[in-house]
Image (tube, rainbow, N blue to C red; front, side, top):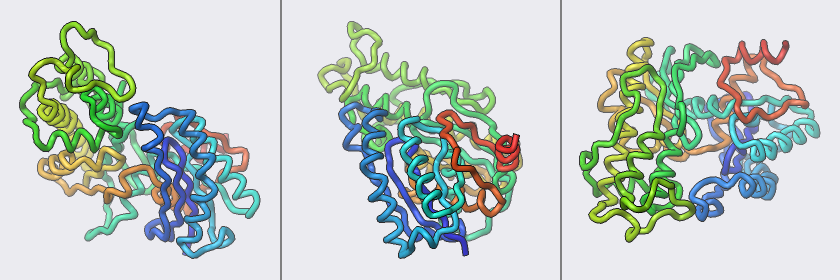
Length: 358
């Protein structure tokens, strides 16, 4: 039996978890900062790092207590090294290194994207996983398609060249005067709307596996703002209904925008899965909680589709502990001089170990 303490502070959730053998969650504690960032319409980095400093110690203590273990019982400490906000990453990294030094435990740095992938190992499944699979990682900061050939063996197929899908949801929600975070707000508004009311662009739909959502966001801006308003995005709480162009139906705009994003994500992911012989399609990250995305991917995919339960779609430490477990059992260890990597690319375990040794 292997027990891993996972710590996650890459953005705006302070999280800690205990996971057994990479698959069984014994505790998964998350301190959310949504209320702190809502007035800004997005994550404010300095506010996030200060909140992490206040929350990290009690969150880790609660995770250990809820799991019924002591720090001395864990086999290793896994912590998010990157990618993410530098100030946020530093809080989790320094706390994890302090624990590892004090308790004489191995330290394992985990890529945040790899953590999202391993959220799929924390879910019940009727059939065993057979590689290769193709995973769509889609969140506020990331939109990537990854081929997974074995544990820790990744091939990056495509990613966003500008805005991530979740970032586009947040920005469009702000344009429409909807609440933060934008993903759930857009989904709620879209329930009463017509997804065909606006013919929003599907950028690069037939061009490889990369994404581009900045043009879609601009198209929404042009559709909803009065002609005299210019082309600047609203800040903070965004626009109010009386600031929108006459006749704008927010539900129709939300539904049409959501349909455009979903169409691009689904079509590119299915094409990647087909062309790479994937046995399954996986979805992970905050945007994978979107109901329309789940329904469309499942309906159109020629292979089975897996996605985590809602509680594991958002940033959490159980996924970091799970990814850390599989790195740990493959012999991966980090030294206590490990530093954060805010722009860290997703590397296969062998590649990461070779770079660490060079």
